[in-house]
Image 1 (cartoon, rainbow, N blue to C red):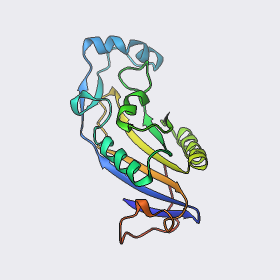
Image 2: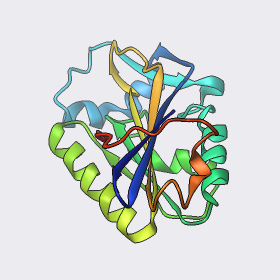
Image 3: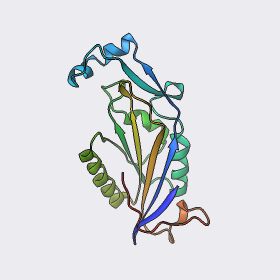
Length: 190
């Protein structure tokens, strides 16, 4: 975990968690389910497609649950907004991946998701994170680089997180561990 100041009134906590994921080929029923997705993305129906699954065939890593619980506990919970950044599509292309994350989040605060497949979308995510920080004072940005559907993709072993907090570490030391150093002028990259 890295703690840094990004100005006199803001600080950042950054880190990453390893996740256990596996890749498996789509079965015949799943291939029919993504037929429209193949057409829209101009992908041949004959290409070998794979999907990424986490433990217990879940669409998200269970390791997110204790991370989110710890961050919520340190920040006092309710005013933490979450911005989930993901890539590509999941097997059920009709519904957003965020709905599968909500049970792991376990909170009642605002939760948003953006698909960030390119640099323009990443800039939009940074703008949204700043707007959420201004409105809520505490923002958790989860960056999940896992491409859950595609040809011969490898599973991402890490999900990064960035917590943006309005205030100072001196007045709100909940994220810092005793004796932990603070990096001045940390550059944040979502």
